[in-house]
Image (cartoon, rainbow over all chains, first blue to last red; front, side, top):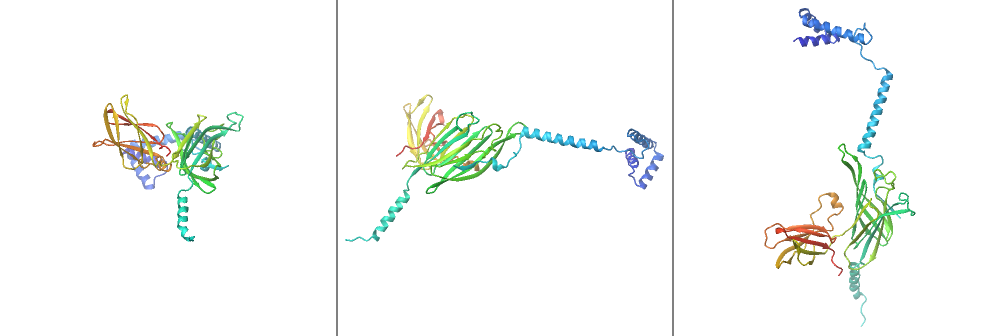
Length: 111
Length: 298
């Protein structure tokens, strides 16, 4: 039973509960010490996340943001790794061949 | 008395028909030379001979060609469609190329089949690039020039000789050339002898016609006489389309051996007419050694 309310606490802190659900949760928290303490713990945890992100006064937990440069480096590295893996696989296990199939076939040439 | 010219017409027509039926009989000859540029070999000549072969036979003789190099293989059935002054050389090819290795390290092959033809004068030469004109079908050929095959198709007039002959010479062992004459034999000479331990009966030579009623053949071994009902049959139809297209069984016959009055199964041994002794295990440890050959020229 407590797990359901704790899950509701999480959703409430994320701003995903409707007003009737928030009212029901508030009524329960007024009478349940365990769930109220869980709410406090969750809130403190989010405060710690916000501090670690460098925004101690944020209204919500800030999401990590990728900088454009880091993103570009990651994309370049992924492409290079893919190309290297493809080249290695082709070298190791072969492939369908680069030329057309006609170029590989036997051909007559009258002298 | 004056004879009518018209009355001679039936005789003339009959003579012409007989001449047409007994058209000039000739033997077709396929001369093969597998060559490659001599630059790789460092020789003084322009080209280096890797292998050669000659296959001759009656006009309906086809040529089964097999050429294998490291990483690539070509098999084909070549036939001639004669015209008065030229000959069409038609071929059905099956090629096989190494395409790499699987994750488990097993070789993977790329297979292909196609038809080709060319027209040349009798005695003329066609050049066959077995792995493509630029050798693209030869995997990992860095530093290795692609070989080609020169096929000369000729004919010599000869009467009555129906046997085929084939000859292959390998000069460079990195290449494997095989050339076989493909022609269904009308008659087959079978040489047989019965062997028990280290004793053999005298050889019996019998001319058979495939699919004709069998004959009883007797062998004398150790003072005993052994009789067998022997027939010559065509083999079972090929199991794969590839074998059928290459006519792998066209020049194969099967010797069927049955002990008269016995309820046991017949013993069968198949082979080409290549003078190779083939063993046929019999009951009680006896062995029949049979050799298939073309019959002697009549």
